[in-house]
Length: 254
Ligand code: 13P
Image 1: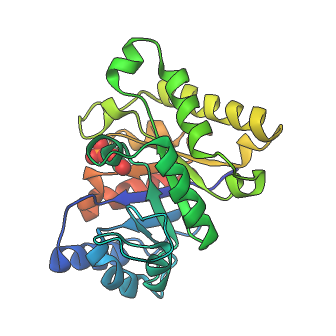
Image 2: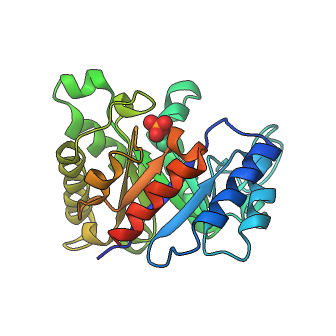
């Protein structure tokens, strides 16, 4: 069985005081997590202080974005090696908010994945359809295009070492999560795409999280599915009790 990976994507929330307090509270509450993986993805300025707090724990640290170039005159951008140097092990790539507001495409996502892997960061690659695409019956087509575009030029080995987050855009921040059946259907589709591209069994080795309005109430029905390997949690990761409850459910099914 693939152990569950529960990650908190704080997006553009929290500041130094509230963010470090949240992590302290969670470290106090989550002393019994052994089998599953927990990852905190705070905004850039909080990576270092949060990383310092997590240093002696089993919890991981992830960024929400990176730039694909190694270094240079790219004002406002952050490189993979900078993220590594402050203790990151993970980086979210291609979140739908970045695709929507910041012009990310399958091609930029692909470049970022290559850079992250070169530097030894584990990408959490986000894919997912909009409501219009779902209603037009295009979910499979969209997800296939995103997965194939994101993974151009990657070896089977590289693909097995990254995480995919299926995040239907219509479920993000709306309080309307995908049903377990809807999520499982797309997770299985992603595994099939990977099996076709890389060989039988590869898809089964890849960790696929679900994201989109995951909360302490629906986490059990989602994380209880063998094909859902974890959750990428937005809003509910900003409150210690709520995130801790989701993490505990992940642990129970790991
Ligand atoms: P919500 O959990 O707030 O819907 O956000 C999901 C998400 O976008 C995580 O990356």
